[in-house]
Image (cartoon, rainbow, N blue to C red):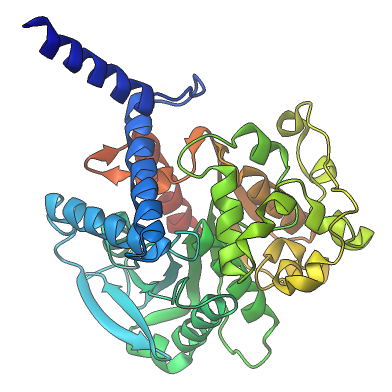
Length: 411
């Protein structure tokens, strides 16, 4: 009888190991930590799906409540902030909630830098003032003498595109007004916009619009995009295929995020996975995201372009947001890109969004914009945010340091 508990324990351990283990590229450091992170995220999504099926809560709302609780725990463990001299206040810009981080008095010079930040999370998850976002913004405010404004734009399922974009654009216009900049003692020549993932999408789209708006007397001087998501017409780029099962952003999840954001039927996912939705776009538009031309050879490998079949023509009319440059900044014309501010684009090798960032960097450079492309060969999606207990990665610390160093030298 003593053998039974040992057998049960061993079986449970094997089951847990089987659930946690996933094959990862050798270049990824701290692989077991990433496997555990992925297991936590998968479990959260499975439980959310079960609760939604039982009618208890919306799938996304359930994930959001779980992740925000986890972020709150991490924030408490880290002391709620790493720079006690930074003044943190909650207010609204153009009616949108924001958190403002102001550096300690006595920084370099009289006027300070300014930066507006949009958080990631697939336009559905995340918070401007919780978890690693709070830590990073405190670090930036303190180290670079910067007033950081982190935006709490509205999320799915409460809203869809273009509402998050319009929220971010409204806060940017408010922030860039001479009166507001003066009230925070910000140098109007040193104001940045930044964001990661879906936040990088919003930052790029807002930067484009501001650059074209002749009514704005102050414009962003730089943009910093952290593994941004920039297009929804090609889900078969080399990075989408190479990294489709790499944590923490699987290919299927990114397609779902897009469908949710654009208020499209989730049943369209199989069509998008094989690029049927983009089978009828014009050659001119296709050239703006033609990775076979825009990517360096080392990233193309042996992959071939997938142009989709003919069975789903008209999907771009059914989901017009697919062609809207406010949702997909990579689709902007060269004349728009030429007006963009000096740019920093961070990409990770093991990220489905890698090629979006690399193609945008190439197109900006071709349009005459100065671009710093910061690529991490051992990076994965989300690494920028994983700098606090219990998922503290060395790659995250390096990515944060690279971002801060670039802003220090360019903003």
